[in-house]
Image (cartoon, rainbow, N blue to C red):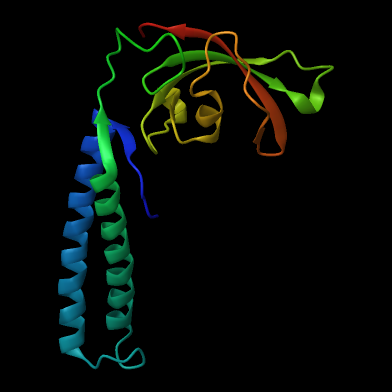
Amino acid sequence: MTQSTTIYMTTTGFDNLKTLLARKKQEYAEVREHRQIAFELSGDGWHDNPEFNRQQQLEANLNHTVKELTERLQHARPVNIDPNNRPTNHVAIGSLVSITRWNLNDIANDKGVNETWEIVGFDETDIQAAKIGYNAPLAKSIIGLQVGDISDELILGSQAWEIEVTALHASS
């Protein structure tokens, strides 16, 4: 993934990204060491030394991952979310927002699905904790909306939805 613009992450997400990058760099160093040992123990061809080939592939994959994470970290800007002072005039990173999802595929029988989500940073979605990254389709559709606003049609899976912002909460 190539990032050309600023991405926003919670301070926790930013710290987690730095930790993940450090771990991947360590894994990369270990794989490079194992690859060198495999090279020295036998030939460098795939038919002579399948372990060398496997380590080469691991090294290439980890190299790509380290570059991608490094680039993401360079473009990331941490955002501090105060759980007692969340944005309330419109949906933004840090918002605790209640919504109603209206299923446009079954308007006659749809009673709406009520949900509350915390809008968090880039790729920080945690469905179990009701946190959704601002770059997720659902969050993208409601960012900037105010209470009472309805999103444009949103396709999630095979269903079409309209999302109504029903409340913005100042604290958890």
